[in-house]
Structure formats: C-alpha cells, structure tokens
Length: 275
Image (cartoon, rainbow, N blue to C red):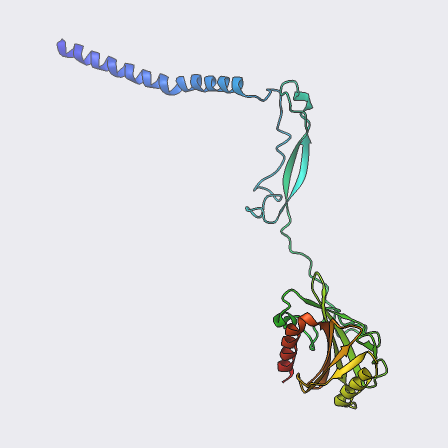
C-alpha cells in the first residue's frame, strides 16, 4: 500500500510539471508578445493612420529593375514618389515638408561605340587631333614644360609676323603654338622642302630676308643642329627668335628669353629624333 502511494505521488508531480511546461511554452509568449506590441504602440511617435505601403514601391535585388551593382557604382538616383504628410501634421508637429522617395535605375549598359572616320572614303578629312611627326607634346613636356600642350594655327604668310614666306616655292610651312592653361610659351615654325627644292637654300634665304629689316640683327652662331642663327629684334627685346636647320627641315622658334633653357632642351630632343 505504501509503494502504491509513493508511485501515485511521483506520477502526480510528473503530470504537474508537464502541464506547467505546456502553459509556459504556448500561453505566456502570446501574453508577452501582446504586451510588447502594446508598449511599442504607446511609445511609437508615428500615427496609427500613417500608411507607408505606397512608399515601398521599389523592387530591390528582385525583378528586372533590381540592382546590378551592389556597391552602387553604376546606379542613378531617381525620384520615385512624393509622400504628402500634411495630413499627419496634427499628430506629428513640425513634419510639414513632402518626403521624397527614391529608386535606383540601372545604367550599366555599354555606351554606344564611337563613330570612326574611314580614311578610305572619298571625302575623308584628316582629324584636327592628328599627331604631328615634327613636334609632339611629350617632347615639349620633357623639355621642361610639364603642363604644356600644342595647337596648330595658320602662319598668315609670314615668319615671326614680319618676314615674308608666303612666296616660297616648293616649301610647306606649319606653325605650332606651345601653351599651357595660363599663358603662351613659344611658337614653332616647321619648313619642309619638296624633292625639287634645296632646304639649305631656303635656310639662307630666311637669313637674308631677316637682315633686310632695319630693326633686326643676325647672329649666326651655328650653335644648334646643322646650322642656326638668332635674330635680335630691337623692337621686341624680350623675345628670342631662333632658326635651326635639323636634318632636312628648318625649325624657327620664337619665345620669351626666360624660356631659353627649355628651348635648348627641345632643340636637342628634336635633333636626336632625326639623327
């Protein structure tokens, strides 16, 4: 009889424990969750009538409008919608401005291929950005003008603005201006003779015409290239005028005298180019 009583007590305790666990697992969390929701509702500054469902209209990482670059490198920000919160101004004091909502637009598509001119076409025109084989920007920058660039311009029929060259036969002349963002640094004229013209005769003719001007004096020191001479212009004392024969070409330089070291470097680079 005593054994049966002990067994009954143990069974009763086990049943009570099981029932208690069921109550704790199933019933108490619902009470706790409801209580938490009530506390959150009481503490939330947003009105219960505020419907933000229409603000969430962007498909992110989902359909075809999703983000292709997770870092946002190829995404644009576009205005999707404007949420008028004036209806809630009574419940949210100070919130009177419209809220702009944004979405991302995928712009990662490849840009269109550039149109390239075909040099075999009948009406082909050489681009103005064509690289000159007689004077290049890397030479100018290596000579001591690190931020300089070159522009080609018409010579107007004169060398240094006062020596006639428009009547030269069998000679092509190109004029280049070396400049940077702030100032003009130098001008370079390049003379090229055709097969029927002697470039040395052109060089001597330039020397002769330079000496005809009463304001000019010739200093033929032959310091550079095959032959060279300076022109001293009394009306422009701050400017150097230098003519140099390099290989089968004549290079004529005008520049402020303060840039003489850089121009010496440039002449040396040109001489090495054609040596």
